[in-house]
Structures are given as structure tokens and as C-alpha cells.
Image (tube, rainbow, N blue to C red; front, side, top):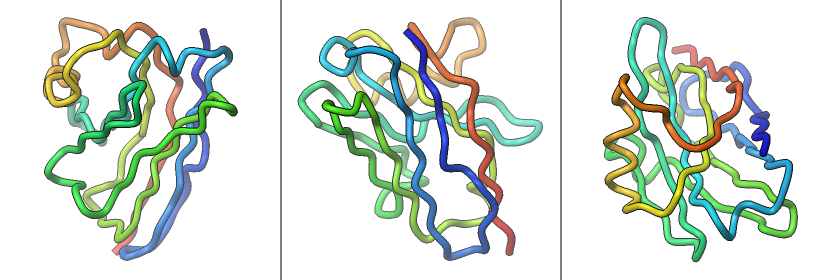
Length: 130
């Protein structure tokens, strides 16, 4: 299984970006998908996650601004990011993880002693200027 993120870029505060996470095989029915980010000098932070039924959860810092969705036919999960802030600047990664409470994954992904999931990608950079 390979996950490839795309869609990052540089935008001004208040702008929008849509990130994509494309899987190399049909995994969306067997795994949950989460987005996490890592800002310069900081650890991992869970951003959003979605389960196989389409139920989603978000970090408080992005609720109301970010939306996670998926297209199973395309093996792709999206992260629509609106009203971007400079503090959203980070490398964004997607990860596939075995079934677990989404809120739990959003919190535990910051742990440095475990992997963020069963599979994860190389990341895409998002830079928001003020």
C-alpha cells in the first residue's frame, strides 16, 4: 500500500487549499484515514480523520474550517482547508490506520514512540503567509 499526498502550496491567510491522499489500492473499506501535520520544530498533530462509513472527526484547531471527505471509487481522501491561518503552516501527511475511535487517533498520533498508522505518505507542504 502506498499513500501519496498532493495539493499543497503557498497561500495568503484566509485562502483555501484542497489536499488529496491517493492510495495505491482499495484500502478505504479496510482502513480509516487520517491527516496529521508537523510544523517546523514541532511534533505531529492530528488534524482530521474519516472512517469507512464516512464519519469524520476533527481537531479543535481546525473545526469549522477544514473538511475531510473521500471518494472510494478513486481511492482518494481529500482535506478541504478554508480560512487558512499562518499557524496552519506545516507539512501535511495522510495515514491509514486500523479501526479505532477517530478522536483517539487524533490525539495519539502525536506520540513519538509509535507510528502514525499502518501506512503513511511522504507529505505535502502547506505555507500560509500573513
